[in-house]
Length: 117
Length: 108
Image (tube, rainbow over all chains, first blue to last red; front, side, top):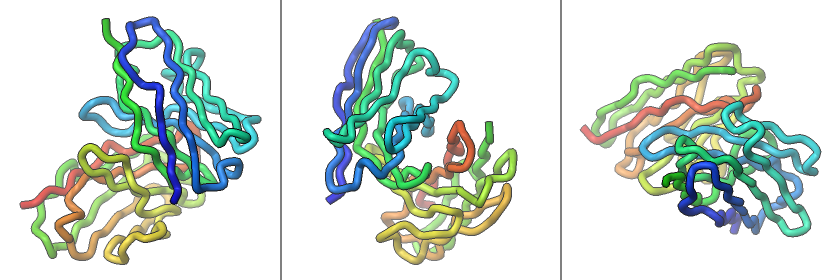
């Protein structure tokens, strides 16, 4: 069974940091482009970042550039998102997603991040 | 950035009826790399259609996608009770990847 399981979410103060993790199983993780997609409460979906299969390329939405870093460890079948300088507008459910191309074929159940004082 | 506009915002229909959802892009989506997702409350999105018209594994054939260039359509031929949900389109051709605002299909 294909599974993506996110962890690391929680409550953090503005300006703080969090590191999200995503553990993959049942899929050829090292062959997948991997993404983070977020969804603010009651809102639509927003793509956040993507990383190439070998980790050699990464791209971000403008609103997180310089604050968030996507990374992966293919030996551990794991994806990460380091989030620094967090703002209220970063409050969302963060989904780990992946696909053989840029289409997000597989999704985790999400981890909730709340930025509030 | 490619902006995707979905219409209508809400579609009120009865089970057994046909649903037609639209997704319009602000620029041509290269190679029709356009995907459709279904999302139910409290759940992650599920891929229905990729490359504009290719049904994902396990998706019933009442779901179909069509269109090219800037205009795309998701059709649900006969609504089943489990199809009442939110639907999002996404262009997967150009960075930043972008989603439409969604269409809610609700029971009339």
